Amino acid sequence: MNYNGFQELAATNQWSAIWPELSMAGIGLLVLCLDLFLPSSRKRLIPLVAIFGQLALLAVLVMGCGCATESTGPLFGGMIESGPYTPYMRAFFVLSSTLVCYLGVSYLSRQNLPRSEFYLLTIFVSGAMMLLVQSSNFVMLFVSLETVTIGFYVLVSYCRYSPFSLEAGLKYLILGALSSAILLFGIVLLYGAASNPALAQSTTDSMNFAALGKFIAATPEEPLVLVGAVLVLCGICFKIGAVPFQIWVPDVYQGAPTPVTAFLAVSSKAAGFLVLMNLVAGPFAALSKLTVPLLSAIAIITILFGNITALGQRNVKRVIGLSGIAHAGYLLVGVVAMAVGVALAPWAIIFYLFAYLFASFAVFGVMVHLAGVEDEIQEIDHYQKLAERQPFLAGVLAIGLGSLAGIPPLAGFIGKLLLFIAAFQAELYTLLGAAIIGVVISVYYYFGWMREAFFIKPALPGDEARPSYPMPGAVGIIHKLTLGLLVVITVLMGLFQRGIFGG
Amino acid sequence: MNIELNDYLFVSGLLFIIGFFGVLFRRNTLVIYMSLELMLNAVNLALVAFSRYHNSMDGNLFVFFIIAVAAAEVAVGLAIIVALYRKRQTVMVEELAELRN
Image 1 (cartoon, rainbow over the protein chains, first blue to last red):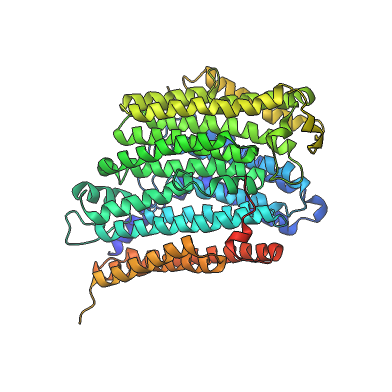
Image 2: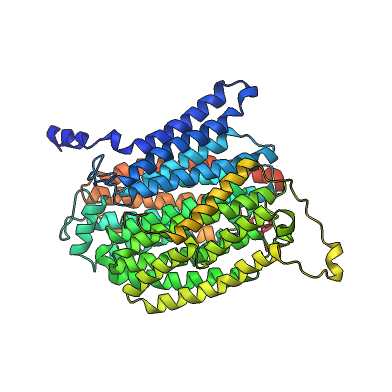
């Protein structure tokens, strides 16, 4: 490459195009500096800075969503390319990170733990996710993915006085590192095939998605390419918790601090799906003969496994984790429809992710309020007669769970409907059948949880022996407002969808 | 005797598989961790070999990123293992599994 080539490359370094990511990093650094220099009596400012800084960024991003954003083309020498979904996903990750920080405030006040690192890590991880979903080069993808994953290792084992949290951290660490290694080996095989000068369309820039896509379209039968693509997809399936790579999900969700569980369930899964969408529509577009049957099989097993194993659970964090596997299955149906070529599918996935975000954070907000100091022990019995004692929380829980189950007037129903329409247009009838069976099963355990909160069971003789759970006090006004807002958005997204994504 | 690209790839694949089964079947957390590192180094070997034989610099560059990331991962991972050891006085996998239904 000569001097002019470098100049052309340098001209693509448009820092202004990634200002939201830079602002996230800025907020994170600000939190870090405040932690260093503020006197300890003023440390209470730090969460406020973290939350309001992100809220301001979110406000700017949401206002920008309305304007038509044209794609800027590849930036930073082909490392990053923003697509049509980028503005929505940026808003998604900032919103999710703000809510995690918010839940973190009430969680951390109950534990004797360092505070500011929690906000710092959450913000940095979210910024890395925003870069991850835009990366169009495997080097960029790997580095931002590892920034996310290593941040999560620390966050999952954040409660370092609790052996459960540490154990969850260790499990996430080993399986996360294993999935990274599998992903890497896939990348290497793809790189090795694409840089081979003996093959047609071989390229010198073989880590780049666009160049790789051209190469794969020219030689889709090359065995190295097929094995590499399967390994890369397996690595990503680990991150989204699809069967057979789901073994970490229930344990890690149970052991992690509740706000981190929410972060894992919402942001981490969304980032995994966006990467999967980028890959399936980008470099692997020519491999649809391989990706469609592979992902279909994974989707069917994932939906059935997640729903059936969630049936017998009594721990609510495990229920959320296992039902999260089922949600990953529904979203995979959308990805398969996208691989077949349905234009609706990506928007259906994004709508579903937003619906999932609002409903999940409503449920997690209730869980954080009700949890005692021992965060990993949250049983369904804990929610008995919640409607009598705290009717507001019970209402929030009902709407959140209803939306997750897909009850008609709520956002979750419309999200599932859009995904099913996309699957129908793609003529994936088997997948559609499995998904509908899954939804029917899921109603049972979501309603079992709700029934516990709303209907009083006749007291059985053995009931006295059960430990009675301490009921925390009334809900603060800010917590009420936040949860109320989440519920209102869930209902509104169910009633009015037109115009949310520009029609 | 000439060493060809396929020989490097064979060694790399072998290392990767040894590492993979090490993660699945070994019971000591530290040994599992070593197996993970073995997998990453298998990847590095393949990258360097491809890079050399296909005359492309990208692979060599990627190796540096992998080494840096692996170092960060080890720093966090060993910290978690040490903290867990202080709580439980063991690093064996069976004795660490307390998160159950």
